[in-house]
Length: 449
Image 1: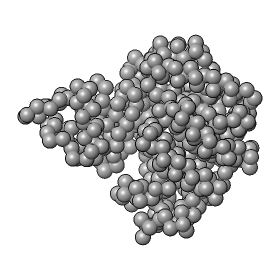
Image 2: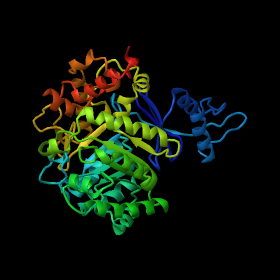
Image 3: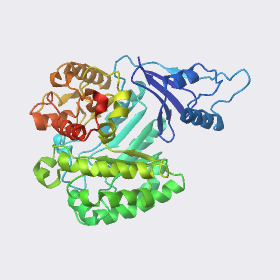
Image 4: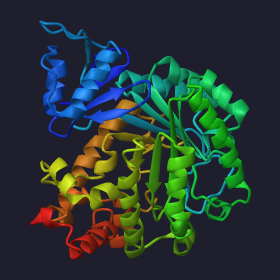
């Protein structure tokens, strides 16, 4: 059963044995995966002696420094509030809401055409949905679109989220984030922003974003973002990059630029999925496994070199799991059965018109991943229960994964890629399988023996 425990107004403990134990800073959004021992150490409210693990010792010392609790000879009992567990195997943790269909760009890789509709939810409907999600103990929200800053009442929506003191962030293409907009977002309680940037050159970025001049405008706005971060008006800046044929030759120089110049709190490297607009431009943007393997192998070497100097989060889609099989196999040692979309098991996706979908990137032709229902007709809680039931049902149908030796590392892969490569969202994700086969051939998969 999932549990959430506030150990202060700022820090939250989360656990779902045997999957994970986490400590979360609700102000900055930073999360630490902690051991079961440290979790019990804090929950038992008796803080003596300190943990033996050096990393976890630092975590506790930091909490003591921030006066979340303190030590005494007898130990200090922590007062905390246990949030009522949500009664599903997969607790709803993050609500991804597409607040609008509108966008000022027409990117080559955009999946949004898969769920694009003619109308957006009205403001009062959004207010009601947010209220219900908060009642369901959801503490993380992602504001996305389309381009969310195109919506005129986006500032009112941000104020509502801020009033509930939940953790929320905005996904934006960065073109509209000028100084004035940033100041308005700050006044509305926005402290976390994720911006798309796909290269160190205007050519790579502007080609993928399908419009000239976008790179220059985004770079200008990123300077404003950096200044806001330095002034502590923002807690978190994330930069998202799409790895494609267009930027593969400059990705290493771009990484140096990220680490040495932009220095965001998070850098995310993603890959396009065969969905939405990407279907039309697939041959132009898609980087096959053999080519992406070379890029990622070298990129991981560079990451390991700079890691001590650049401790911020670097997220290479699932590449880290696939390229660190020993670590992954030990972390997921308990996994013996397939899990339908392990990556987003705790996510709820709501389209701009209120449709709840299992995956926003899925093809409309795929009945497994498509529409579950609409919040206007059934309500959020009922739809989340349907999402959980369907994920569990589909997990049992992943027959190709049951006997696969890569299961603990692949995690059953991506169902959208499975639909593309195996003609079924219940089939094998052949892209991940090929990447793992390449590594096994290079002798990196001894953990599976």
